[in-house]
Length: 480
Image (tube, rainbow, N blue to C red; front, top):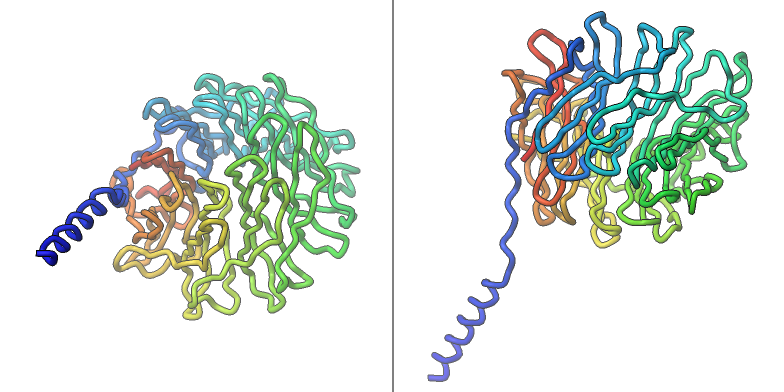
């Protein structure tokens, strides 16, 4: 009798425990991609360049890239999604823009749905490169305006450009970029930050570098993330006095930009480190993460991560690549949305590496509860050959810790580039899902693929480009 009772109790307990274990989430199913309808006068996405996406809320996104017009000139391409409906327009340039403006768009940031800023470069009639910002207000993109550069900027043969943008509050955005100062015959490439306050853009401020800079520091500023007005983190690179590329970490605290600081690197870093910081994200105020590459003492180009914890940047940590990585894995990081952190201690990033058998593969790496784990090879669909030289893991987004989506490109069984999205479900990485392209297209070609992805709760949106049967590039959006 006691045995029967014990068996009943155990069975009841087991049933109770099973009933309170949360159901395991299923991998999202991605719909067929939808073509981005280009605005009147645009014929194609220039070289597949459609990498910038921001989605303050689900089904309300803004995107940016570049397009060819009917005469072959390169123009800015701006996208707006409202309640799932996409519209596109050509960037309206300042009056001094050249007829062939050679527009390059390098950044987008949004405060709320339909209130964003995009930035990049355009050429004037004398082939000067002007850094520009264009505001989106209530879903409508306004005419671009040139950034007023810091004192000392050269007046001719300028090559200024915006490279990063962030908008913590509508009407209060910050952009980073580069410009030339000194003389036309001996210019120096410097970095700038420019702020919009109350809807008005102010003259840019020159970035203060560490003391060990080259006579020409060749500053290259990249991404920026702001969590409130006047409080931001940004990344870049510069040449030191030994002509070696160093990582640059920048902080704005209560409206004041601090002197930039170097990255403290892993112990196996070469004296000729060739450091490159590629992508930045901030999960909370003063808690940010960066991915980059560096050269080890053996000359291997290796990925690493560096974290800011409560305002203090830590020593960089080398990412351990999969066991089939070559002695020089030739790591490539794409940098558009190259790292994401749903919490301050949980992140996902990755890129591409070279194997001992001469293949190019994608890698995925997780930070779990503050600890960076060894990287895993991106699992490709059945029959795929490899990620390919222009493939691998490109864009990253998470709805929560352990539940993420990664945009990728890879070579299928026929050696043709395809777009894929791989899902992480409850901490387990699935096999990449091939994206069905619009209009019967069969390839994204080397320049296309999934460039950007944003996830909100259970809804994700991705942006990319593909090649048509006529050889031109077009844009696509895809959601789950």
